[in-house]
Image (cartoon, rainbow, N blue to C red):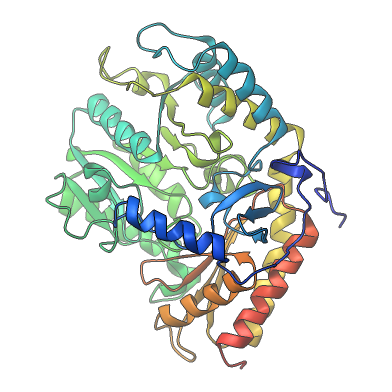
Length: 461
């Protein structure tokens, strides 16, 4: 395998001309970051968390450069947002041109071509050979909430089915859809009604083994929908094709197709939340394609616009048109600058074949992660697809979650200049979301640091 994306030089202020190297000149965080973090604590509300208190001045390729001059390897990509890089050339060029023309008019007042062009791209790129339409919003939570609104308008029903370990956002409705209490829901209720949560097809934790997980979980979910919710009450079934914050859970094989078929047979709108999985992240443009599932609606955000705030709902034209005129929108939804960035990001995905690049990243990372599982008894599971990979950390000899060891490993990586993220309902999953333009040598160096962090934080088996 060759370094298909390696040491491309980006402009000095960011992007690919930054030296693609890990470089530590101070402790992490350094003194200037510490001083800025003190200012942050004085000015920013306590409820806004910070995982790693280093303040970034430039970023691109696979590195983040902080105010102290440290260059960190990025295995987080802003939670899967900057898949095309932090300052992709085409994104920057499109944004500069648009900002110079105008920054806002509100599409609902006086429209502009960029919004239409993004919708056309989404309609063409999402799965399904049928007429489609799209609507643009600002955040993933907005996309999910509007997908539910559209499904309810189309079906005339109110119930929404979601799953254990799900994460769908932080608005009132999406908090109800999200499974995990702390920190997302604690003290913020009451929540929106008519939300029903069913067991997830979680292969690692399925009682009869991963080989039985998909069909058994699907049968259980379908039975519950029939007996506990009532099929004629269900507007939508909403699911992440690979759960994100819940721990990068890849559903057991057959689970998604069975749910999709059940929805089709019963007039239920099947919604795929592709906010974290979409736009080449998993080695397909959209993760549902791994099992040839065609949703009625797809909610997207994160990787859609190279770091600018934009989200969308795309789906069957008859369903999308169910909402009355004026029922969808928002002042900033489909902002022209964000639309320009999205067109640049989609061009970059095509130009650099980032769908294929995600598969290359998996080919480098997954074997190394499986090697760690063979060496360290605390690794219970290695899973994921493409450049969306994770290891679940447990107490050796059990399946009991070990959040403390997970945190220790992450902190050791951070101290050594590698940004890794944690996740999972139990806080015991290390997740890896590198930018798809990260060079191979940084992937390998980051994995070396991860191995050292395991050795320092655990006992080898």
